[in-house]
Image (cartoon, rainbow over all chains, first blue to last red; front, side):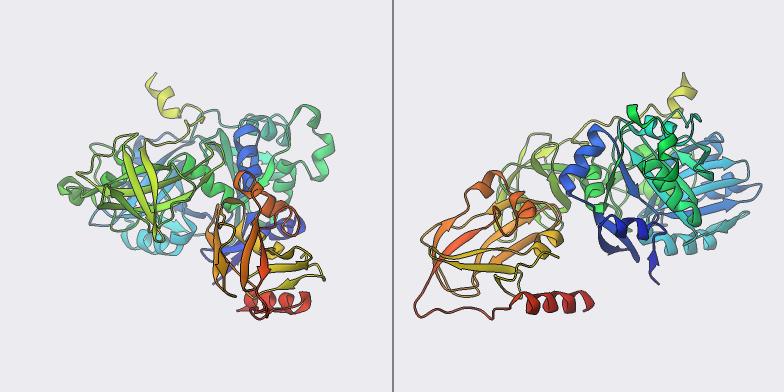
Length: 377
Length: 130
């Protein structure tokens, strides 16, 4: 089944180039990828993320029940806060990576990858004990407002209501008359927000945030930047610059959190499906960053070599407009010495590109401190 | 979609323009839009001889790699050096400043199957449906 974003008419009117992704028609590019990427790092960018799956685990035992499936113990997460979490199979392979938010004492909202939405819902239904799963697929929207100007733009669009102040906090807001949930999260490494609501309200919320709606005149736009609409291509460049994994590229059912360098997202002293396998797992490979030195772009599937010896494979690559270099992520064998700056090469379509190993992220994150830090303080 | 009437097109998304100084070749507006931002152009050397349909060079975009094929057999007489530093010209002005190579055609002239603007439009529309 194919889904259209409720914002599709807005994107078509804006002349966006559309692609099909995970069964959704979505904008890949509005103007130029470089301009969209730069707008996000210097001002603000607005993304349609209506394809992201929203799943709601409900019932008086919702937090405890969903914790049995996630690498995070949601009973330790305060109401109005969220965490990045992994959904593992029994072999400790990553079924999906997601954000889990405690909306109330009886509701946890999961934001999952579009490509895994259906199989996540089926898996959770099969394994969830003592709580119910609601899947409002196709009746919701998601908009990400990202960049250093995001807070001011959201404040102007929401008539001065206070947004969540800490990274990964979430709360209700009213934008253009629509009741929405706003989390201080994103996939760009910039400060910013993700706004979720009912599909029929998508257009007015988008227009309010974009500064094009009926209420735009009422806003004090004089001192407030206008976000630039941005597509999936810019979103991919931004997430790669941050070294964020993308399921289907850096993560899959055969990859463990240890190999992916995501053990920080596994709570200690917490039991869940995949825990036992994870404990006894000895990783054979690990995830690294790569910067291409020459003129060329490393792509998924290219071989990573050290000297003459193949040591791994690229999982995704693109060109970073902020670094003026091609960047990539990939996996190398565990025993490979690939500290930041070490020379590697990438065999790409019959030619070799010089590359160096790089620490992730490529660009430091500028997200707000997490609510977790506040709790500890 | 911008498809100048005075150009010839190929099914592989090149355009060619005949002039006194030979045949100028580039990629179509449709092609640059499909590619998204072009970031590297791997230009060929001048003097190289190509047959009609031969690969001339490759382009790297944010999204993918694409190959440019010679619409006409001949010797490459000029390459657009500006593309080395300003690959974005391919996106901004694909029929003008974003030209890629110039070819001096062999005599007798040998080309791949060429399309006029209407024929090329039809070919990309059927590609989109396929």
